[in-house]
Image (cartoon, rainbow, N blue to C red):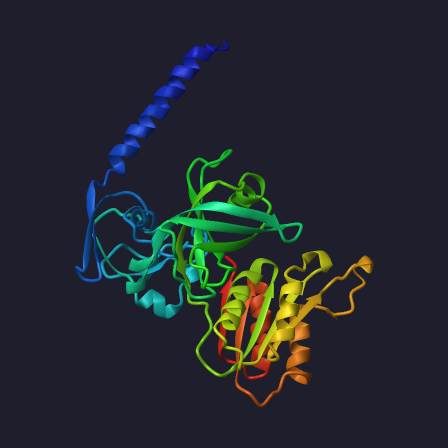
Length: 369
């Protein structure tokens, strides 16, 4: 005998099950109020339990860096935990060294606040702010990279080191139900405290890049959090060997403009920018003009796969091969050198291998998440 259940009965049962799930979740995961003790009592927060430490801290105005917005895919939101919160999760271990595991360094986005917790945070994190701004301009610099210029309004000034980044807050849209944040390096000079400029490359399926490329428009109100990061020019006399590709241009551009504006032109700077074809190149005129006015600045764009219509007469091949060639035959070998890299993990790892070949150990990089 076949039993037929009326659609309205199915609907009632489904609704009842959904309600039961909500009630059970509220009971089982109701951790009540918990305390976050920061830096041995310097700051104590009473918060509602149950949410990740990263998001709870940000809701109180304390912003821990997170390039992926709390998805557990960047490993940036590391904090030192001074109390017992259980063993490291499998989602944390890929981002931890043996020393960090011993010191109980954890990912703030993976720690769920179930009880009182004690943590240590670097003092500089207390100076991180959330800024409101207006999209002053948004323009294509290549077919898949937009230059986003934001005028800050609240507060209306930001202090940052050239090379640092901010987290851009993306509002809900389409099927994205909650605000999210993504990290982008600042490409403008620190001298312009009223604006920040970001270079955002379209990534298929990317929550933030899709929003910026398809929905954001001039005049929109946006929020950014920052500044973050340890990628900046070191105060030495070493030659600077800089390598970037794609939107990795951003922090390098900021550092170079800052050096020029502050008159730090006595250091040799070699900037290698890798692209596939000519349509992937941008700001070429800016750096070529700078090269004319700054004798110790050298700009070397290279195309790995130039098209016939590009009529390209510059360097060709992978940027790491071009870097290797210059270190072997052009750049003086008897001077101290530092590496500054920004791009994909693959590019950075390959560049580090080239640097190792020539004994360059001081390498600083901003690796895409």
